[in-house]
Length: 151
Image (cartoon, rainbow, N blue to C red; front, top):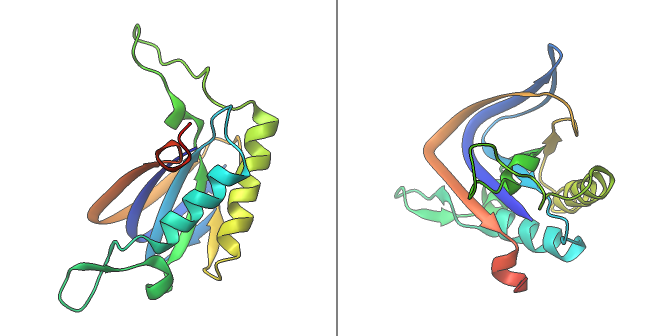
């Protein structure tokens, strides 16, 4: 499972002209589910994301986590994070989980995120979304659960 996180001042997701999710200061998390991912991958990533010290303290140093700052989370499913671009000019998505599995695991990821007590908003699974992000820093990090699971 991969997560691309961006620290933001504000962000929103629009589907068919309707804002379906929005946050103020916090993190936008794009989540890609691989075919061999499970609940453990989601739990590991949620824990890493909410505890990672990427928010500035009084001196401007990265010393505070999303939990410590009561940051908000905007979670967006994004299978394109699993793109294999090694061959040709068209990305391959064969490593991405099938739709039903991906939707279930993304839902579990959302539930685990909500359990942290932080405000959580989402996009809509398998919909064309417009994501408006005011990236703060900019701070953008890519996390991969395989780093901790050894897959």
